[in-house]
Length: 192
Image 1 (cartoon, rainbow, N blue to C red):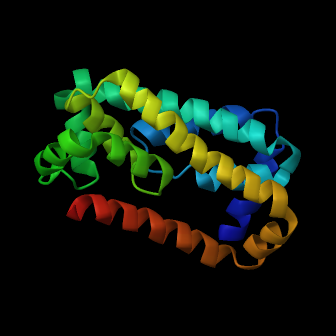
Image 2 (cartoon, one colour):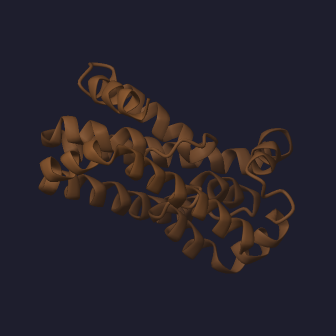
């Protein structure tokens, strides 16, 4: 099953619609959706390594735009949309405590969550809730997300064939590692 999904993603990576899917999922992942964008970006770069930095740029732009959507949800639609998202991820009870940390360490939190597998959508919504300056939010999100996506693109561009072979031989292990990293990110936010 995992091999079929991986092969399907590689096939879609070569389709004319691949970049639109990448942008859409990147946007959604930063504002409300739980799918890590790496699961789409990595196979796309492996399929088209000569487009690695273009794909990283598409991911960055869409991710930051999605982050701004999350920010706006937090700022203007928290009760209607933001709170249910926070509750869905299991942070409802801890969100007030998270907000108090956020007021002191907001820039650092955005930098860390933007670069790591921590759930960025929770941070984007919290940024809007606490009223973080939107320009500061953008100025922090762009380098954090950019560093993450361009690092992945550079590694795959440079070492693509061996990494592709490793992924294809150990697909279950690789996907499990992504899931574990994602869950660790959620747990880290939950217990901060």
